[in-house]
Image (cartoon, rainbow, N blue to C red; front, side, top):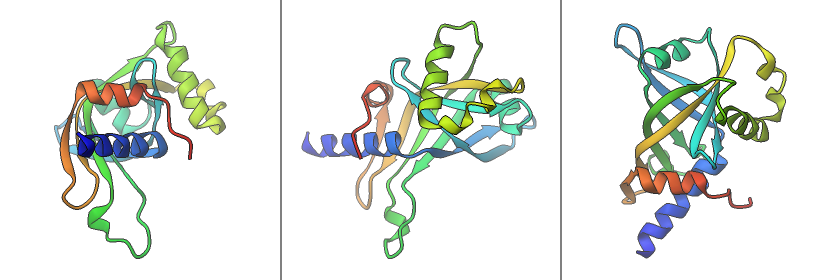
Length: 165
C-alpha cells in the first residue's frame, strides 16, 4: 500500500502543479493531432478545464470526436535523465459547458484562479470552456514506477486540494 500511496501523491503533485498538457484529438479525417493546452482543475466537478477558441482545430476535433488524450509531464531538468520524467497520459471525454450550465461558473472560476491573466479572453465570443472527464490514465513516476490508474482514483485526485509548494 505504501507504494500505491507514493504514486498517488506523485500523480496529485503532477496534476495540481503542471499548467500545460499535450492534447491529442482526432481530426475530421480521423488523423491524430496533438496541440498544447493550458488546463485547470475544477475539484468540485471533478474534471480538467480547458479554455479554447472555436477557431482552433482541436476545438472542432473535440466537438466531432469528444474522446481525447492528454499528456502531462514534469518539465525537463538539466542533468536528469529524460526517460525518468514523471508523466501521466489521461484518457477522457471533452464536453463543452454552456454559460447556462450550473457548472460553467465553477469551471470559469477554476480556470481564472490558475490563469488570472486570461480574464479578458473569457469575454471573447469565440472562446468556450470545456470539461475533460477523465476515465483512466497511465502514470509513469520514474524508472520502474508505472501503473494504470482507474477513474475512481483520478476523480479523488482531481477533487483533492493542491498541496502547497
